[in-house]
Image (cartoon, rainbow, N blue to C red; front, side, top):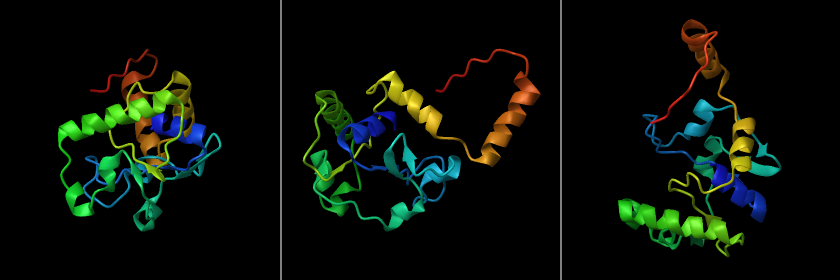
Length: 155
């Protein structure tokens, strides 16, 4: 998310956070972002679309990486090699500090460590867990960790 945000910021694009098909939800057409995070309209001046309106939105082509220009039926199965290729193409695009002529840039590959720490900090400052999730986090902290230093590990 941070790498895509930084690219949108640098190029004046809108950031669409489209987390449909998440392994964390049973509903494939539900955008996971608003399920877990409070709604936002922008991140540090970058317009953000992140709610279920994403289901009615039609992203304009052409697309980058080029694989996304294929017919929808051809996009059903994306082998690992293709995902890695897209990650490398996106990394190269982000490193050039230039924009791409495609109307829509699709970031659907793990781009961890493809952005600066400032971008990551901006994302962490800008998105907040939904209140019911934050309440559960606070309760777990109070019950198990209050008064202790914590190191979190995500695997």
